[in-house]
Length: 167
Image (tube, rainbow, N blue to C red):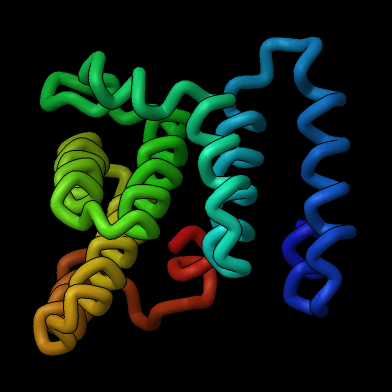
Protein backbone atom coordinates (compact mmCIF):
# COMPACT_ATOMS: atom_id res chain seq x y z
CA UNK A 1 0.00 0.00 0.00
CA UNK A 2 2.84 2.39 0.81
CA UNK A 3 4.33 1.77 -2.64
CA UNK A 4 1.02 2.71 -4.27
CA UNK A 5 0.76 5.88 -2.17
CA UNK A 6 4.33 6.91 -2.98
CA UNK A 7 3.66 6.27 -6.67
CA UNK A 8 0.52 8.41 -6.60
CA UNK A 9 2.51 11.16 -4.91
CA UNK A 10 4.90 11.16 -7.88
CA UNK A 11 7.74 9.19 -6.28
CA UNK A 12 7.92 6.38 -8.85
CA UNK A 13 11.50 5.30 -8.08
CA UNK A 14 10.85 5.03 -4.37
CA UNK A 15 7.65 3.07 -4.99
CA UNK A 16 9.47 0.61 -7.23
CA UNK A 17 12.31 0.27 -4.70
CA UNK A 18 9.74 -0.62 -2.03
CA UNK A 19 8.21 -3.28 -4.27
CA UNK A 20 11.65 -4.68 -5.14
CA UNK A 21 12.58 -4.80 -1.46
CA UNK A 22 9.38 -6.63 -0.58
CA UNK A 23 9.91 -9.09 -3.43
CA UNK A 24 13.45 -9.86 -2.17
CA UNK A 25 12.17 -10.41 1.38
CA UNK A 26 9.47 -12.78 0.17
CA UNK A 27 11.57 -14.73 -2.34
CA UNK A 28 13.03 -17.01 0.34
CA UNK A 29 9.65 -18.30 1.46
CA UNK A 30 6.69 -19.75 -0.33
CA UNK A 31 4.46 -16.69 -0.40
CA UNK A 32 2.68 -17.16 -3.70
CA UNK A 33 -0.23 -14.91 -2.79
CA UNK A 34 2.02 -11.98 -1.87
CA UNK A 35 4.22 -12.57 -4.90
CA UNK A 36 1.19 -12.34 -7.20
CA UNK A 37 0.18 -9.06 -5.53
CA UNK A 38 3.68 -7.68 -6.10
CA UNK A 39 3.59 -8.80 -9.75
CA UNK A 40 0.29 -6.99 -10.29
CA UNK A 41 1.51 -3.84 -8.52
CA UNK A 42 4.64 -3.81 -10.68
CA UNK A 43 2.53 -4.15 -13.83
CA UNK A 44 0.18 -1.37 -12.72
CA UNK A 45 3.17 0.91 -12.11
CA UNK A 46 4.83 -0.05 -15.39
CA UNK A 47 1.67 0.60 -17.39
CA UNK A 48 1.18 3.96 -15.67
CA UNK A 49 4.70 5.13 -16.58
CA UNK A 50 4.78 3.28 -19.93
CA UNK A 51 7.78 1.12 -18.99
CA UNK A 52 7.86 -1.75 -21.50
CA UNK A 53 11.12 -3.10 -20.03
CA UNK A 54 9.57 -3.54 -16.61
CA UNK A 55 6.53 -5.23 -18.16
CA UNK A 56 8.84 -7.67 -19.96
CA UNK A 57 10.73 -8.37 -16.69
CA UNK A 58 7.52 -9.13 -14.79
CA UNK A 59 6.29 -11.32 -17.64
CA UNK A 60 9.59 -13.22 -17.61
CA UNK A 61 10.07 -13.38 -13.83
CA UNK A 62 6.60 -14.79 -13.26
CA UNK A 63 6.61 -16.96 -16.43
CA UNK A 64 3.30 -15.45 -17.51
CA UNK A 65 3.51 -16.41 -21.19
CA UNK A 66 4.51 -19.95 -20.27
CA UNK A 67 1.56 -20.19 -17.88
CA UNK A 68 -0.76 -18.85 -20.59
CA UNK A 69 0.54 -21.36 -23.15
CA UNK A 70 0.14 -24.18 -20.61
CA UNK A 71 -3.52 -23.31 -19.98
CA UNK A 72 -3.04 -21.82 -16.51
CA UNK A 73 -6.17 -19.73 -17.11
CA UNK A 74 -8.16 -22.53 -18.69
CA UNK A 75 -11.86 -23.29 -18.50
CA UNK A 76 -11.32 -25.99 -15.87
CA UNK A 77 -9.64 -23.67 -13.41
CA UNK A 78 -11.15 -22.98 -10.01
CA UNK A 79 -10.79 -19.59 -8.39
CA UNK A 80 -7.41 -18.92 -6.93
CA UNK A 81 -6.36 -15.43 -5.91
CA UNK A 82 -2.84 -15.89 -7.29
CA UNK A 83 -4.12 -17.15 -10.64
CA UNK A 84 -6.55 -14.24 -10.81
CA UNK A 85 -4.00 -11.51 -10.02
CA UNK A 86 -1.41 -12.96 -12.39
CA UNK A 87 -4.13 -13.18 -15.04
CA UNK A 88 -5.00 -9.52 -14.59
CA UNK A 89 -1.30 -8.67 -14.75
CA UNK A 90 -0.86 -10.57 -18.02
CA UNK A 91 -4.04 -9.03 -19.44
CA UNK A 92 -2.65 -5.56 -18.69
CA UNK A 93 0.68 -6.46 -20.32
CA UNK A 94 -1.10 -7.77 -23.40
CA UNK A 95 -3.25 -4.64 -23.60
CA UNK A 96 -0.13 -2.48 -23.37
CA UNK A 97 1.25 -4.38 -26.36
CA UNK A 98 -2.00 -4.01 -28.27
CA UNK A 99 -3.05 -7.67 -28.08
CA UNK A 100 -6.56 -6.88 -26.89
CA UNK A 101 -8.07 -10.19 -28.05
CA UNK A 102 -5.74 -12.31 -25.89
CA UNK A 103 -6.23 -9.93 -22.95
CA UNK A 104 -10.00 -10.16 -23.34
CA UNK A 105 -9.83 -13.95 -23.44
CA UNK A 106 -8.01 -14.05 -20.09
CA UNK A 107 -10.36 -11.52 -18.50
CA UNK A 108 -13.46 -13.33 -19.77
CA UNK A 109 -12.17 -16.56 -18.24
CA UNK A 110 -11.41 -14.85 -14.93
CA UNK A 111 -14.95 -13.43 -14.94
CA UNK A 112 -16.45 -16.88 -15.54
CA UNK A 113 -14.41 -18.54 -12.80
CA UNK A 114 -14.97 -15.86 -10.15
CA UNK A 115 -18.70 -15.74 -10.90
CA UNK A 116 -19.02 -19.54 -10.87
CA UNK A 117 -17.22 -19.74 -7.53
CA UNK A 118 -19.37 -16.99 -6.01
CA UNK A 119 -16.50 -14.55 -5.49
CA UNK A 120 -18.67 -11.50 -6.15
CA UNK A 121 -16.17 -8.77 -5.32
CA UNK A 122 -13.34 -10.42 -7.26
CA UNK A 123 -15.81 -10.95 -10.16
CA UNK A 124 -16.59 -7.22 -10.09
CA UNK A 125 -12.85 -6.42 -10.26
CA UNK A 126 -12.42 -8.73 -13.26
CA UNK A 127 -15.44 -7.13 -14.95
CA UNK A 128 -14.02 -3.66 -14.24
CA UNK A 129 -10.84 -4.71 -16.02
CA UNK A 130 -12.93 -5.97 -18.92
CA UNK A 131 -14.81 -2.65 -19.05
CA UNK A 132 -11.53 -0.76 -19.24
CA UNK A 133 -10.44 -3.01 -22.09
CA UNK A 134 -13.67 -2.14 -23.93
CA UNK A 135 -12.98 1.53 -23.26
CA UNK A 136 -9.50 1.17 -24.77
CA UNK A 137 -11.17 -0.39 -27.82
CA UNK A 138 -13.21 2.81 -28.15
CA UNK A 139 -16.39 0.95 -27.15
CA UNK A 140 -17.44 3.50 -24.55
CA UNK A 141 -21.10 2.45 -24.61
CA UNK A 142 -20.15 -1.20 -24.08
CA UNK A 143 -17.80 -0.31 -21.24
CA UNK A 144 -20.42 1.77 -19.44
CA UNK A 145 -23.08 -0.91 -20.01
CA UNK A 146 -20.76 -3.55 -18.55
CA UNK A 147 -20.08 -1.40 -15.47
CA UNK A 148 -23.80 -0.74 -14.99
CA UNK A 149 -24.64 -4.44 -15.39
CA UNK A 150 -21.85 -5.39 -13.00
CA UNK A 151 -23.25 -3.08 -10.37
CA UNK A 152 -26.75 -4.43 -10.81
CA UNK A 153 -25.75 -8.12 -10.90
CA UNK A 154 -23.32 -7.86 -7.98
CA UNK A 155 -25.79 -5.92 -5.84
CA UNK A 156 -23.11 -3.35 -5.06
CA UNK A 157 -24.57 0.00 -4.13
CA UNK A 158 -21.65 1.98 -5.51
CA UNK A 159 -18.29 1.54 -7.14
CA UNK A 160 -15.42 2.23 -4.80
CA UNK A 161 -11.91 3.07 -5.86
CA UNK A 162 -10.94 -0.49 -4.93
CA UNK A 163 -12.58 -1.89 -8.05
CA UNK A 164 -10.28 0.24 -10.18
CA UNK A 165 -7.14 -0.24 -8.08
CA UNK A 166 -6.38 -3.48 -9.90
CA UNK A 167 -7.27 -2.23 -13.36
